[in-house]
Length: 221
Length: 221
Image (cartoon, rainbow over all chains, first blue to last red; front, side):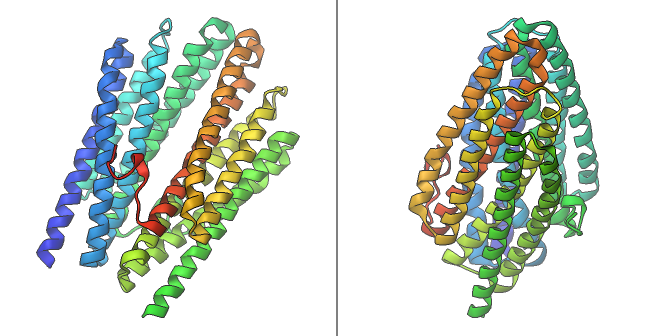
């Protein structure tokens, strides 16, 4: 019984890493498509997202089986609950990357804007957050997870900068409204991706320490 | 043992309804603040969101207790897993309403735009979706949940209309870029709220029928 549970836990961990790898890859592809103005890079992303959705269902089903047949307790139960949450976050991250992909498709039909460099910078930074949050999950590293929570402020700063600069740009260059709005929406999606990476970091802390750091900790504030 | 489980299930159901009611109320307050240009209505929303965050933690803790001590199976286990997911969605809905609240605070300092009527229409429609998805949860109504999935298309259409009209408006009226962008971002948040209501409807279908309708059904496509 014990060994069956360990094997199933290893299996869901493996699936989470595959799914996380897919999210990272999709984010890298779309960031490169924006940076190099290469729309052909967008085509692969649909396939990657389909794989993410398949893994999403598979992980939920495996967790349901574990809960129904193995009745895990204590740290095993916390880990399964965290996997369920991380699974939801990764799937929504796939949705966010798809939103970016669609908007990038539109953006690449328009004249380029210099402000795009801020977007690729944001994309690279968010991908680092995603990668590090999953590394923390593999290693059970709650300490580094706390560092990831702090990185989210940097993403918010970058997004605010994109918003400010593009608002000013639109006022002076109304012909660039469409392209500017595309980049603003992409920045917003990247900010949401950063939020999801933060959620994963919070789930890692809960899984490996039992501490609930959401909403500023136990107080629920 | 059986009665203890039933009581705990009733307790999490009750908490979900309270939390859902808070989300509905917050959404109503912010929609009215926009419609009536009354910024004082925004003040209550912070308090409502704090309550949502407290219930979020409480529901997760209760579900953890149920899983650890009662080892539910079959439909009880499906219900608890659905409650965990609905809990996550409601908390994120609270975050979205807070985003709308902050943006509305900015919007109300600027000259009004006629297009705001589309936003209040969207807000009312999304609130209806939230209410109906929670009614389905209470009644275990999987059939009506399927209707809610269809309502999401209407929200997307409304959002696209807001985007199109405000893009054109910005091009001709660069002085209205800030206010237009506020409404565009609010429309995007409302669209996300509609997505979360859709997620709840999907969870209700899973909880009460065992059918996983996400990603177009069992195939994972």
